[in-house]
Structures are given as C-alpha cells and as structure tokens.
Length: 202
Image 1 (cartoon, rainbow, N blue to C red):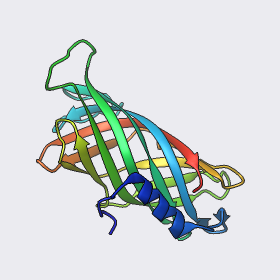
Image 2 (cartoon, rainbow, N blue to C red):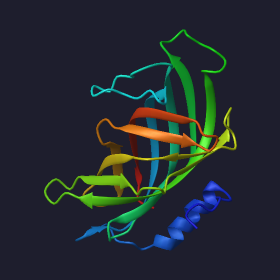
Image 3 (cartoon, rainbow, N blue to C red):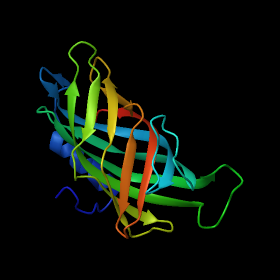
Image 4 (cartoon, helix red, strand yellow):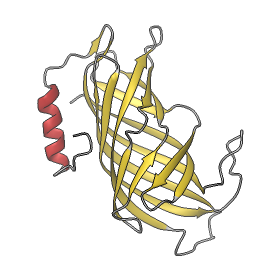
C-alpha cells in the first residue's frame, strides 16, 4: 500500500487529512499528525565506483550538480515511526565545472518519492532526528531522460524542529552524508546533498 501509485496530488493530500484529522500537536512520547513540506535541495553527484573522501570531495569524475524543488507531506505516528510522500519534485543536472556542457551530462526531470522513516525527539532541545527506514525508499521518475525508471536509496537523514504550538515543522539535512542511489536499469550514483524543507500541519 505504501507504494501504490497516487492518482493525483490533491487526492493524496485529501486522504492524508481524513486519516489524521483531529490529531494532537506534540505528545509526551512523540509526534502525531501530518505536515506539508515545500523544499529545495542541492546535490554533488558522482558515478560509482567513484565516491567521496573523508572531506566529502569527489574521488573521481565526472561530477554533476543537481538542484531540485519539491512538495509533499510527512505523517508522524506517536510510536516513533512515519512515512513521507513527495507528490512532485523537479530538478536539473549540470556538469561540474560549469561550462563543460554535454548533451548526455545536462538534463531536467520530474519525479515522486515515497518512503518510511523512524524518528526520535531529544528531550532537552526538542530537535527531531528523522532516519530513513532501510529498503523503503522508492522514487519514480516521471519525465526526463530516465522517465519510467525507479530509484532506491540506502540512507536519508535530517534534523527537524517544530514550533511550540505544533503547527509547523522545518527540516534540514543531518550534516554531510554519502547517499547511494541505485536505478532500475542498474546504474549507481553517489551524492552528498544539502536539503531544507518546511510547512504547516495538515
């Protein structure tokens, strides 16, 4: 059910609202409810077997820069679990350094993503740590050179902070982390990303 194709973004949002209507803000042992998000990211990407060294510098080329905008929603359960649905994301890829344009290295695409996560809330700071549940990430590419392909990803982590009234949530990447992405055609890419997103409670 997690990976069922969404008929439309608006239908998905409406369903989420119905499922969690009336959920309280912050509970004693966790968070309960859903939050919209509108976010951006910027990623430096290499082609495996290349990766990043301990200073997060690419070990080999070619190197690409990807920028994206996306929107969707997250649902938090009070037991420390939840799931995220990106209804639509749009990104561009350009080679690094700028000016090294080739038809094969520059493109744009759109996509949707669904995954599950676990989270913890620090008692003192109230900072939320959100961690991808292994083997649940599924991205479907809707347009661009890879249209029709799917992507899995090994790690995805972020920090979050909720306003005191529980009405909005902001997240940011949990530092620097190498993420490995495997495409359905067998291609493997590794990237390091900077992400930020925020939105109101549904």
